[in-house]
Image 1: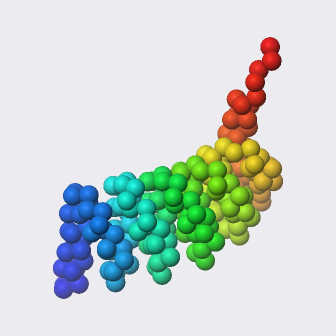
Image 2: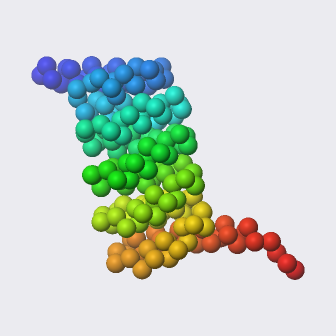
Length: 185
């Protein structure tokens, strides 16, 4: 019973910090709490709040020992959408856990910074199909012409979901390229 009381107190204080937009308090929770579920919840709440002051603590959380903290931090960084997160998220594309890599790819697509194009094209070769799929989606969101060739190759992937995501991304990138070409009529 004492454990439930303890968890309730942590969750209550996180909810209180969320209501007050307590960025500093939540950042401390990310750094010091022993309970990974509490750290992951703090990372989630920081993403919901969406304040750019959360970027640095969330970037540190991409190195957390617990996978749920890492993937939640990546997801929150994508929600916030600050370009300062690009470098840390590109490093997370090589995380040992495929779910962290997937969330890093999705977050990079949400941010939409062209610095992520090369790492995302490398992630199109990931062993896990979900990572390949979300990397293709992210490249479609970024809409950079450097992704055309790798997306074309991914459109022949052995997995249907990856092929579909690559084709959708190709359409987005191609449409952007067509808009950039001046009409000569």
